[in-house]
Image (cartoon, rainbow, N blue to C red):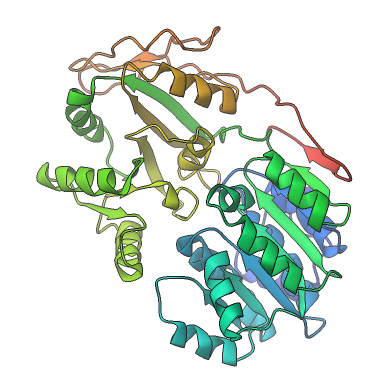
Length: 425
C-alpha cells in the first residue's frame, strides 16, 4: 500500500471511486486534490485557490460524483468558456459513466436542439457557461431546482468576463441547502464577496499564494521594437520543436499573426470568439494532434486549453489584465512537466511589466538575442528587479538563467473563511 499522504487512499473516497481511479492510473493526488477532496466529501463549502494545471477538476469531480451516487440530486458546474466546459466534461466522463451518471454540456455556439436532447435524458451532472444556461432557463428547457452541488470553476475569470449577473440569477434559482465549491487561480475581492453572500462558512484551500506563477514554468522577457517583433519571433521559434501557444490581446491580432506565421512556413491556427464553435474545435483538435504546431489565441483560451505537452507559451502581446499573465503561462508546465514562457515587450511597456511582476511577486529575467538585442525598457520597472537574465549563443544555447524567488502574498480571508492549507509547492 502506498503511503497515505502520497495516494488517494485515506482521503475519504468511496471504494468504488477509489478502484476506478486505480484503473485509470490516477495514483498520486495533486496538492489541491489532497487538501480539497476530504473537506468536500465531508460536505463543506470549499474555496480552492490553485494555478491552472494543478488538478482542480478532479478535486471537485470526485466529491460531486460520490455525493450524487447516493441520491437523485443534480450537480452543476459553471465555467467561463466553451473550451473549458468541454474539458471539464471529458474529465467527468472518466468516472461518471461507471456510476450510470449522465452528463450534459450547455455552451453557446452550438445547436440548442442537441442540448435539449441531452437534457431530456435527465443528466445528473450539467456543465455550462452562465450565458447559455440562462438561455435554457428562459426557455424552461432545464430544471435546476434539485441542484445539490454547485461548482464555480475559474470563478475569477467568470467575473472578469462580466458573468456575475447571470451567476447570481442562477444561484437564486437553486436550493439554498446545497454544497458550493469555488475554484480560482486568484482571489480578488469579488470572489470574497461571493463567498460572503452565497457560501456557508467555506474552507479555503490555497496551494500557492494568489497570483503566483507555477514553479515548473521558467520565464524570460525580450524587449524589442514593434517593427522587429515578427522577425524576433521567427528566430525564437527555431529554438523549439514542440507545440507553442501564442497569446495576443485582440481577435484581429490573433488572425494577423496566424497569417504571418503561415507565410513563414509554420503550421498555425487561431482560436478566439470570432471563430465559430466548429472552427474553434478544429483548431484545438488540430493543436492537440500536432496538425498545427502553433495556436494563436486571445485570453478566451487562457484557461480553456488543457494540453499537457505544450512546450512553450509566447506572450506576443502583453495582456490587458496583468492577472491573465499567470493564466497564460499556466498553459505550459502542466501535470508536473517543465515549461517555458517568453514575453515580447516593446520599450514603452515598462509599466505593464511592472504590473505583472507585482502580481507574480517576482521579476521576469531579461533575455537578449544575438541578432535582435533587447532594447531598454522604460524606467518604470519595479525597484529591485534583477534583470540579470541570460543571453543566447548564436545556436540558441542557454546560459545562466536565474530563478526568481516567489514571496508569499498577503492572504485576505474575509468574513467566515478559514485557511486550511497554504504551501508554495
